Amino acid sequence: MKTKLTEPVLQKFKKQVPTEGRVEISDTLRPGLRLRLSAAGKAVWMYEKRIKGGPKRKHTFGTWPEPISLAEARKLALEIEAEAAKGIDRVQMAAKEKQEAERAEAQIKSLQTVIDTYADLHLSTIRTGDKRKRQIEVALQKHLSNPVGELTRADLQKAVDDKAKEGRLVAANRIRAALLAFSSWAFGRSYIASNIGQGIAKAGRETARERVLDIQEVRAIWNATFEIGPLWGPVFRLFILTVQRRGEILGLRIAELDLERGRIVKPGSQTKNDKGHITHLSPPALPEVQAALADAQERAEEKGHAADYLFTTTGTTPVSGISRAKERLDKILGDKVGPWRIHDIRTAFSTAMADADVPEAVSDRVLNHVAGGSAPSAVSRVYNQAEMLPQRAAALDRWAALVTGESADVIKLEVK
Image 1 (cartoon, rainbow, N blue to C red):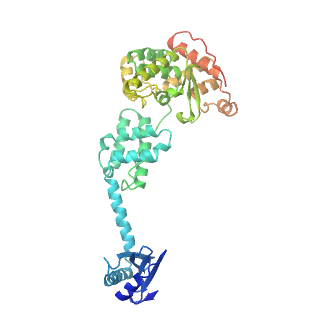
Image 2 (cartoon, one colour):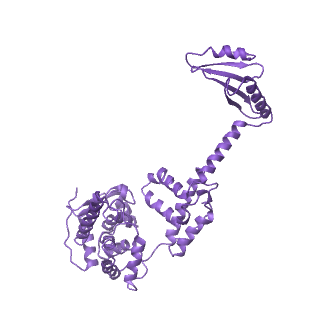
Image 3 (cartoon, one colour):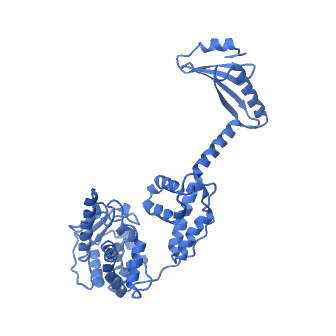
């Protein structure tokens, strides 16, 4: 309904409350201005006007008769009409102001808060999310309590360069990748004003590692593990005896142990290549696991909860501090072993088994590789899906005998 609005007209209109929905009355004196009446009896001013060279915008002024009278509504409509003729868009301006306010509020959140949000929304969806979160937190430790908006590209580059100065080129490049992903995510959600991760230089070009520990060096490391304490000694000994990846041993859950059959059973969600994996526990490895299990259960009982992880100080989270533990181990070793990495143990195993004429396919499966480097191994991995559990057990028993100098009876594993 269109008419020249007056107070009497509006008073009469307000008595026509609809039983459902809403009704409107439009002003002919100020086209585009109308009063909307809802079934609840609430009368609200609306004004619609097209912006010059832009879209038609709808504005809400407030309720009638208070706080917006007819005269006040016409005045507001006239102001908007004048602005629209100049191309001024109040709706767009209000949206930008709101966006700026939200951006400003986001950028004063602490970096730690934003990392936690990143972990909840993104890292929780990937298998290595916990590791990635710790990686970012350690790299940006000095900035965690500061507003995230204060983080700069120089801060990210310094984190990469500092790790490179430690002689850890690969780790530095992995940190760079983690920071690139985080900064891109944070920029996309307005936590930072620009994508500060763009342009971060690599620590350097990575080259294939050629270090191979010989059996004498592995034995030296094995002997030294008995001098670094009851927590880390068993960890390093299981690194050696099982030749599994570092994270898979550090994060080993008690539920993944099958002591009756003498094996570790990892689900695909807990392995690097997302494939379930069985690891035989040789005669020296089994008592290490049993002793560690007893310690974990004792700690858990003292804290009043069930044990979850095999190697833990809290009972509920995996043990941490592997870098410091290795530094202590290296000091004990002295000059008996040159610079080495935990991953080198896997290479040593593969090399020793090759020298002992153990088929590459068996070593591949022990290490849980998708395929070996040779074409025959890659092809056989696709077409030969046999688990080779007895052969793998024999290989690990043979490896344990080499490492410890003790004889090892092959435990035949039941293939199911």
